[in-house]
Image 1: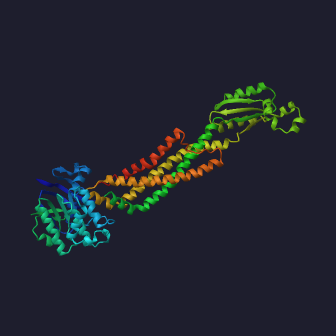
Image 2 (image 1 turned 90 degrees about the vertical axis):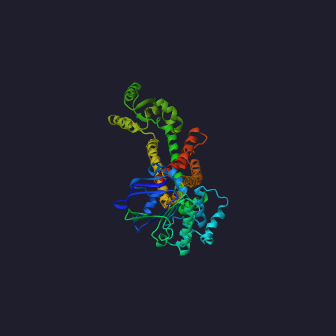
Image 3 (image 1 turned 90 degrees about the horizontal axis):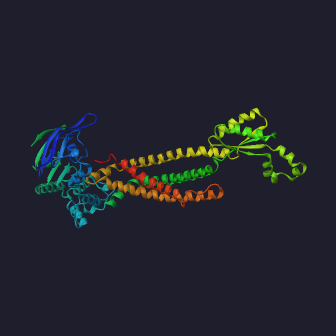
Length: 221
Length: 288
């Protein structure tokens, strides 16, 4: 069953910048999709269209056969609650602590977890940042913020995981850790969409590679 | 989560909330004073505005018939509601006690009476007609030197009050608009200041409902505190003002049903309805 369908989707930023041109794409449930292409190819824009931070200029996107243009905000929120999104610019609440940032995400997902604190600390331990749990996010380094962003997304155990350059600021050990997590996610039948131009990640043969260049789909492997 | 979102909202917006407190404190204080003056003026006008006569004094006229003739002619003029005639005899009776005793001893009553005029108390339909009618009557004084026009000593004050009454309604509407615009701009400012956080929350699957509710809670709480504070200040000043100037009564008089309803309506609009409405409107384009 197709989870996501892009039907003649274009995105033009005013006045004339064509970020995506006539994209036709089908992502099946359980796919591991790697979106690649040079900087400015349209990877982030395509992801933004999936989680509807941006709306397409033309064309239609379907999630589980439901057209985005017909979905109400409330309905779309419930989709987002079952997704995990790792943002390129982290998108953390700077005034809140690491623990609070993760907890908000977990609570919003609606997952019933008995000992939330223990659960969060387990993940923090895994990424070696448990000692920073009570620090404000704005006091962390870029790499640490990226780890918080990753934990915030994966702790929800989402049905669909969208990751935009998740390895950009990470050390090799952490890169391997995150790739391992993504693989395991996919093995559990969950869908992963990963945007990256990191050769280390691309060489891992994780799944289906989709290449974008100047807003166009140039290779669908 | 509620706690965390409150933390975000407050940490980012505390200065703006302080500003809101100060603004509303003074806005409400002056609003209550507008109401206070408006109701007092209305009260004075209700007593005087349609009962204020123009006095026409007619000297050296002994023939009552001529007076009645003049009176019936004036009665036909537009703007005239009624005329009351006071004869020199009546005037003498009224003023006897005020006249110096030497005068009463020196002159006979007939002699004194001859100095007194007939007075035609001419009542216009309303205070607005008063100056037009007075000008028309003044024309009569030009043709007859024995006729004088005397204005009521409170006329200027009451006429000004009637203009102020209309002005104060316009002012109150402008004043209310100022408040609505302020609330809208403040909400927009807060929204744009918190836009980044709001969008993160929405992308994580949250909805704007909780942000709207939180904003309303904070704004409502601040407005309520500012309202109580400024009401006490208003009460203190207006109560003292009313005890100095006896014709100024303390308003709102909450023992009167009408005042109580207005007051509850005012609180509902100022503290609940308008803030809620402006919050809803300001968040209109924030959904993603």
